[in-house]
Image 1: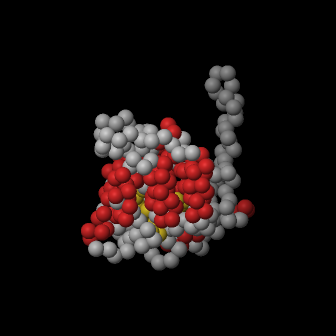
Image 2: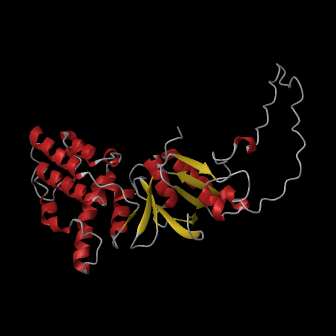
Image 3: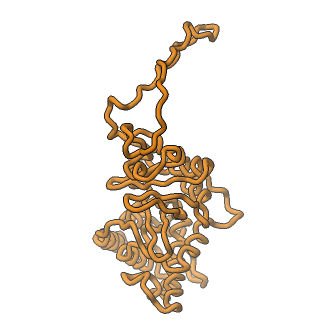
Amino acid sequence: TWYVAHRYTEFAVLRSFLMHQNPYIQEFKEVDEKFPGKAFGLSFRRSVLERRIEGLGAFLVFFLRNARLCRQTSIDAVCSFLTIPENLSTLPKPAGPRTPPPVRDAATAASLTNAAAAAAGASRVSSFAIPRGVSTAIGAGAVGDPEEEEDNSPEHNLWKILGKKGMAVIKHGRQGAPKQRILHCAPDGSLLYWGDKSNYKSVFLDEVQSIRLGLDIDPLTPAHLIPAPLPPPPPANATGVHASAPPVPPAQTKSKPIKSLAKNPILYGTETLRRNCKYEDLALCFSLILPTRTFDIQCKSQEDFDNLLGALRALCPPPA
């Protein structure tokens, strides 16, 4: 996955694990120097960069075509997955007549798994460099052949909505004016990313705590300012007629239009949205609530809003 690809040390351990368990994969040994190290993404000569992209793409195709493997969240779990003999049968077969040898002993597998766990010290980053050509290799390995059975999983639905071209949205930030961005997603639905080709920014969807609509009231709003919901109508009798007329809501005074969300006593959306967004645009806005920040976007049409919000709600965990 994208998460595995940009964690260099863990990816190198995983590559060694694959080669140790499956020495018949000579093709991968021959391109050992093509895989990313700590210098991956810097300015290499074109020929060297192409070889690195080719080697990385070969492994990512395997990851992205295996749904169970993509859902693992740690290299520790991935290595455990690969120690199961029937799972190893899903690895790409070599071109020659060689056959895969049996899996090594459990002690060897355990030592490699421990090495992977020791390497898993780096925390996730919200920006990473993607050299030219990597996105093409990943896209080709993720979508699969047209004849394959249609995938209706939430991850694939998000990929279908954003596609290879992405979706144009307006991103609201904590500083500066709102800016138009092209929103993309990883083929396995693990993250959203945007930005220029030299420095993509990203949001991991498994870190999202909840999704707040632009017209939702911020919990920071004082309780006495939150409008009370209207009471439900009385239950109907056997004939389907209400026992009494539904309650008439109290007369509403003509409210003034909201000119500034920042100065309005009722706090809509998030602090970031209230800084620059207009009240009439909140209906097309929503925010992903993360542990230390919010990701706030404004869609350009109601159709984009409904499609993107529905796909993200299917992927992100419901609020506790």
